[in-house]
Image (cartoon, rainbow, N blue to C red; front, top):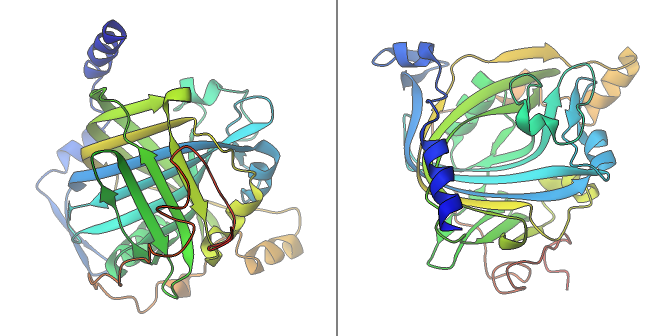
Length: 334
């Protein structure tokens, strides 16, 4: 195992930075977009990251994706992938905040990709994740993420807790309803150099938006039987689409990055979300599948104040079950 890790570290450490040359050329320049000041490139420092991926029903994932050009990544045997990523952004242009991403792994194009191939041909198949729910700690993060990059951000009560054995994060909405609780057992130390680009697909204003983040970190990763995690879904409206996904009990992988550097590309793309008829498009819009309207960002300020922390005393979170199990009932359900 030590030999395998040594080889993996050597190979991963030799990979070039995924950050495009344009982003490096922008270093030292400044911008003010929608009243928010940015030092270019748009970056974050010393961020802690928790990740866990779970198998889901491929058919249910397909039904959850908007439009006709997003397709869930297939693992074979009718399984797709739910990716939970929580980032404690400790140093950014807009202050400190937590971001809690719940997303379906997907590709973008005219037809689905064969099973597993999107992992190997990420750029060719435009592999990424469709973000179903994206609560954040601060108003300014909502304003920038949604207004500039089309992300479905909304303010919520979030935390990020690290200890010697586990890393966990909880999301309650502003009304105090549990959104999600995720906990991973810290993987055995692997110290893998991780330099990667990740694409986010989001629905907003009747369009599909694609943005890209680049991450450079050293992290600990566990795969398959060595990965242990627990996910609890609550009653908050934002997680309602996830409840039909048939989330598996055992994680596919977990990762913990104690200190990551990130760059969010200032370039993004968008396409119209389409339906067979205008009536069908109107119905999808009314159901929220095509994202919120422009009015959702009108009037937002640049506040950096966090709401109160989430309530970890309720049944269903910290002490309710051992790491390694997964539960998707509403908060407090035995």
